[in-house]
Length: 472
Picture 1 (cartoon, rainbow, N blue to C red):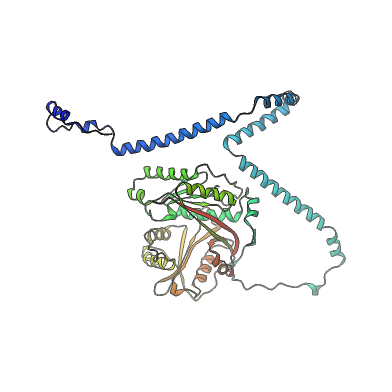
Picture 2 (tube, rainbow, N blue to C red):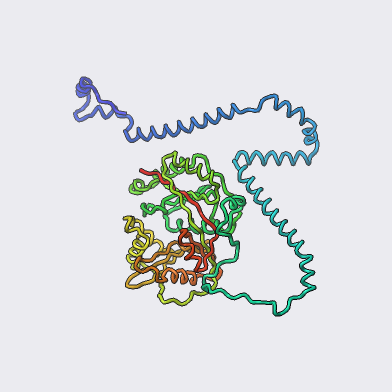
């Protein structure tokens, strides 16, 4: 981009130009930084043109032979005439051809077929239930009328000793041993537990982030004020729209092509638009891909694509637990208070760092800004138990978009205060602060399922996710 003037020309230029004039600078057409930027832009445009040319070449080569077209015309001539001269057939054919063209142009054949399959499965189950009910109404009903039950045969079931505030919900109970393949069979209609729990998870990230961008396949969260907060600076990919949990009839979208490249470009665009130079330097492209409703082959293909583009991928599995609030909190030996105000922040940060192990990993820079937002945000409630300082805490999230849903985001207890019932007391108090009928969700690790089940939670499903990070 720049050249050095030879010695003879430099001495000759000094005779014709005033003193102090640097003739070498006039030969610099493009600055080095600008040259690098132009090189990168040229490479991206060249790659895009190459892919477009390759697709056009493949499209021109894959043509139907002429003899096949002629055979179709000869064999279908009578049917074509019948359609052309019958208005009803003509209109129906035009509608079918137009619908097929739209589905093909928008690449919606996969979602359309899954939606039809799901509706057919629901209709089949409904018809089966009606037939079974009709058959069971005949002979058993007659036998019941002929032989009435005696009063001594009627027994009352004993009431359980569950906590009054943590009685499990009776809707859509799912077995813990239900396989993932059974979930795939009806994935055209999202399960309610998945739509509601992932909606709460996504909204909690939105509340602790500075800004949110929505995509067809997920949401991007950006937090320049807290660049080391990993969950506040990532793309959450769910392949569906989860902003309305009460409408669970969403259809899963197919993963877009070159998903890893799209994530890279999204972060590149964000860096060009963001004014925080420290944010540009410290935030790496990161995404959390929710593969719960994807089959194993699709999940493996997504992981291979990200690994091929240089990402480091980590898989995780969590259990989704749910309960329905059914009363006020029982009495406890511990006094639970709701934290509010900046004066509570130092003690809360110290408790969270020690109870969750962030201090041992030397990963606490992001903790104080995040907890400050949760203390001040109206959708969060932070409860704590004090014993010469905060020794246990719980963060509860209730979205303004769905007040009948709640998420227990985190529960933490100091190591020296564990096994004293503080976590149980916090969960019962948090549930008791919600209206009756509220559904409370939380993501639990496998070894903690028994603890939450003893408090009245039920296992409603398992989520599988892949965290993909582009290293330095």
